[in-house]
Image (cartoon, rainbow, N blue to C red; front, side):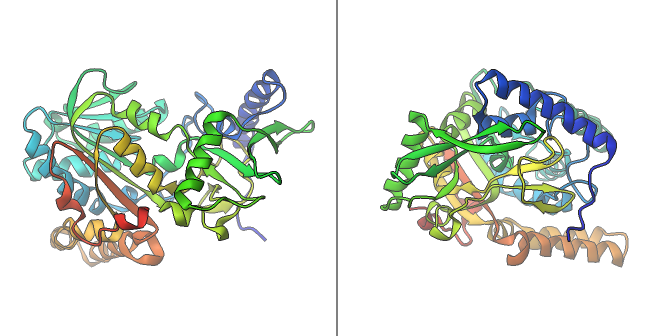
Length: 396
């Protein structure tokens, strides 16, 4: 029996509003919408979607915990890795964080960059959620020195002018609205659509896939050097190359760094993963029904890191490296940052919390291997960040 309590009355009323909106769009589109559109509305519908409404998402009181929410060690190590790139670019370097979460990453990263004398000319946060933007603003204004906070800016869209600097995104790719496909009995690619049940709720149906989706799946099969079998279902992001080029804007020189959970392509589309990686989370519980309670649960899919590598190279960058989170953090000063933080800790309880944080970030059964980081470079040197355990060879 699940220990997950049912949503309260206010939450259910909120979800009902979003369900009504989704049902209206389904009705206006002939009785079904692609799963990717359902996921987009469930997560990002203005004022109602999971990331757009006011409930707490991150940390112990939310639905999941991200690396920056555990403490400052993760962000400090990312800052260590990116500071040399900022130094190479010089006074005009800018920092773009995609999806700022609670603001915890920006707070710790800016503090470490200041200690390294590598504060960027501007720290821009591209955040689609107005609610999260307000929370980030309040946190950073309260916790950063005024001169440092003055460097922070929130963007409504990608940078329109040419710019140089670094881009960082933590657990953003897994929340991109993903297409779902199935190989039917005729070995054709079909797409999963979402329809509305008459008495409430939603269901999955299959329909013909468009050319973009078919081509994306066939590209995966060529890469795997084997067809996917009939009945195989999974996720794919045909729009990933376009999304990547859009969010980085007119970046002419710099580095990209992505942290997320996922697999190289051969593991992502392994025969044992024949139902894909799609799942939902609510109150730290894995929820089997991703269509239930829209707006109240996170919907997520793992990342095909081979697809990300292809998208980065296609955008004109060189692949710098691909490592587990544990190796990335250990290779970018985790031990030194832990020793420093312990020395400044108030008491033994605080020191124990720091050690627990480091273990959560690096142990294989926690975040250490399940999460990976991938970097790209253009006219800068970024290889130093991937010296420990580089595994790009697994992407083929």
